[in-house]
Image (tube, rainbow, N blue to C red; front, side, top):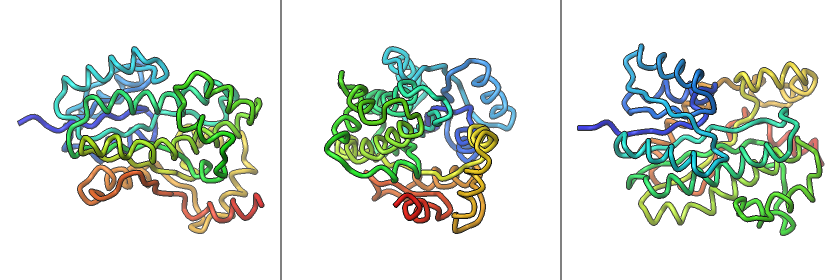
Length: 269
């Protein structure tokens, strides 16, 4: 009997790797943007007795996403998708942030819908910062439909060239996509939820901490649990969301931030 398959995008990154380490009972499809990091990750898993394969994919490219889905479908019954691929505000390119974080998420959802197995669980990644963007008719329609022609320009009219703001808006968009897709995936007997991490010490998180040490120090002082998060803190929540224990959850978001968001919202008032 074939193992069930879990696809992990951004699978060579910190949260992606930690997630895979928790899923030895599945066949893993590791997708990322570069062959070398994919191969390194796949080799590491397989040396530990995992069953892992890799596939390079630019998630902003529809044809490459379709190729990833075709490859994944050949591996067996797709019972889980963990879409960790994304970039932080340090990219300083609002269009790139939009394309990867939001357009890429929509393309992954569209592709997965065609191949997902009944009972499957899809886990998307928002951020605690997505919760800092208030609802508004001025931009929520565009955030919910990132593949529409004028969506990016509608959002850019609001955020201008502010990469921090664009990051926050794209992560609100992921929250909206999660809710919007619950019915669509439910019709196939599948679930879709999201996780909103706080400050997590991945390579991306460490880079942000090095570039903005005072900001990280301030966030830490505002965090109820008085520490930053580790990739394993998120990976354990992912495992729950992929499992039968979360079988009645769909269209939901889990905030995993050590209790910092209330302080951020109070500070931003």
